[in-house]
Length: 275
Ligand SMILES: [Zn+2]
Image 1 (tube, rainbow, N blue to C red):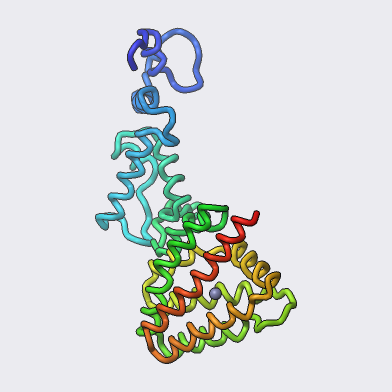
Image 2: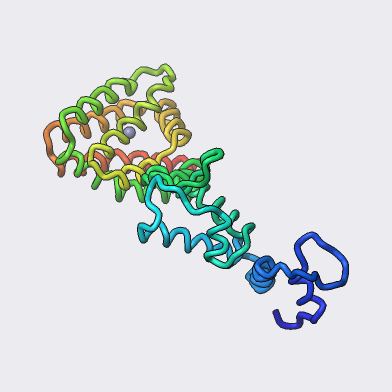
């Protein structure tokens, strides 16, 4: 902001894309406010403060219940007038919240608040487990070691008979020591743990747990254990978890889940050290 000449200030009031030295007869005040904000904002921040503020205002409208899940958001024009920001900033704020799973654009019908399910809101979070490598992947497993035993213990206390049937059916689909590569095993293993956490009835816990799992990594774990002739160990872990759930024994469920995640964590540590 310091050192800006008078000519530069005139530039702020000229509509974007226009050239020429004269001041526009109808200054684009809202646009100028945006450009001023941008001029003084930290260039390292991905979003300008004005868009950030618009994003925060929409979030506040939702948090206060002014617009509820599944309801239509006021138009971009109304919001931009209400918040005193340009329509382009408003559009950018709406786009950012759409990427985060908070808003959805319905063709020809406007912009709506989503159902705000934890699974939708945490979808972008799953990218962490999916693209992480090395040390970060090890950290992800350490977080899983904190969460999964607690979730499995809770499931032992809360799972319904149908939940247990679902978990049992998935256990049957996980490979039992054969050496043939089986993609269903990877999906069934993921599904087994997801079904367990889902049976706690806590959708946020289930979404966080899903976000920390990755099909690619799970496939790598199975391939590594097959190579080392250790798939029977994974099989044992799963059976012990299942037995604890059926016995309605939270302590045993917690212990079995800890052993299972720790086994994978140790395997990854050794794998990283060897590569
Ligand atoms: Zn497993």
